[in-house]
Length: 413
Ligand code: ATP
Ligand code: MG
Image (tube, rainbow, N blue to C red; front, side, top):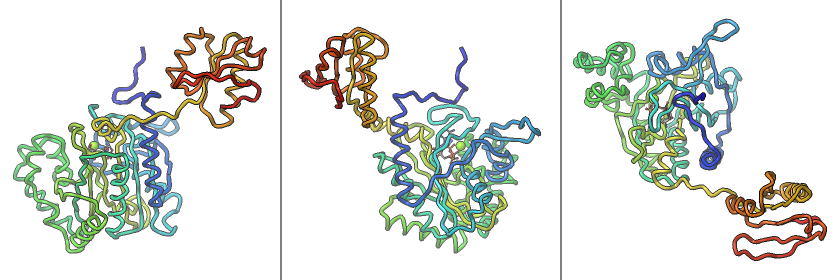
């Protein structure tokens, strides 16, 4: 038996209504804020992620699915995240000359070769949003409020917003050297990966998943203590904006995000009760990304929200039961003539917008009635040769068992 690839999942029809419900909420909320849907390819040149996500990140160093193109051997990767592709599309389609801000959202699957566990898979689904062309913390607050709106509308409780600022080009160098000297003094206890990237990208050490590194990272210098006055006043305005919007948050210096492109405000929504993979949404500003991918100087702010983790939290809180739309009619048919008539009747109902089914298996009446119950049909119409000859049949109300006689010609429920 051929099995699915480790870390991927089949989502069967009993689970898709929940996915579709959540996706519907995400789309509706994004569109309320004026975001439009963007669809980009699943595969991109590997170079896009190396430059966009960063060559010292775990995602690029260890987790990408990369292969050589059959044409020319060029290196291609399955997207590990959505932002780099959106930025590429923005540049490639010349969107930077449109009126600002530009607002895009997407619901995509991403691929990372990680260790599969609850809330962490190798193909995962993500609702992402990107906004370009505003440097104001008002845009940070808008993006955060969109993520908060989705979480609120899904009814999730016990999800906390953590915010931080990781500084800009101005304040990063001083912070960087404070970090390097701190970690240098603990170098012996760091994992090999962190030892290697200590000089290249010390911020990554704050995001290492190795327990020993995490203990050391806990007491590392905090970004918020090294912000330049502009970053500080921006962070302050973000906090005031969230206060004004009634969005609760905690300032958390451990939030640094795992991808290199982040600058300034960063945030995560963390859910209680779903285990170690508790970040249901993460995002932040990436003011240098468009430029570093060959576009003009254009600031950006976005987030990614993991659908599987949202679902874990909804299950944990008993919010995962989504009622399927009701089946209006089941037509039970006995014999071939009746089966054809049943097809005619159900076809008419469907053209009229109703959900209905009829027997296409050729089962006994008893088995058909059992099936009608299973699919939750509101009414069942029972037809055989004699009903067709008479042009009349019994319509049974499945709720109370009452029957009424109806004419078959042009019958609609
Ligand atoms: P984590 O720290 O949990 O690994 P991340 O910072 O790598 O997350 P992002 O790249 O910011 O994650 O992706 C945005 C969101 O996508 C995450 O907050 C999470 O909800 C979800 N996500 C990321 N990686 C996975 C995965 N392997 N499986 C399931 N969901 C994921
Ligand atoms: Mg990760």
